[in-house]
Length: 76
Image (cartoon, rainbow, N blue to C red; front, side, top):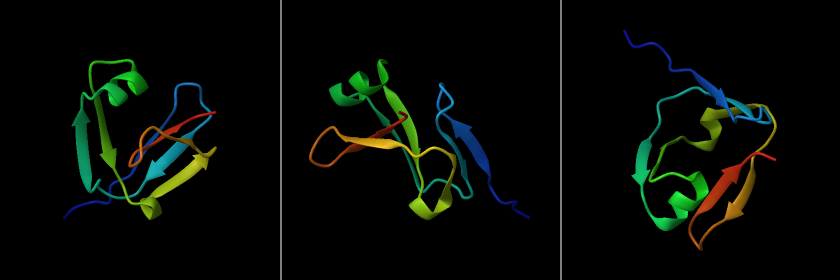
């Protein structure tokens, strides 16, 4: 029997806290210049969830359009 997924997390400064209630529908790994700049690392890894699966417990992320097709979220 599979139990429901429930992951929690937030940003380092504490402005954002979230809980997700489902498995991610995708995960990604990228090393393009935009991902390197946004993370300050050699590569970026993340998981994708549907909007209705994310419950913001504290704060709301701001968004920045880093290209015509990509929006990056960040804390305030």
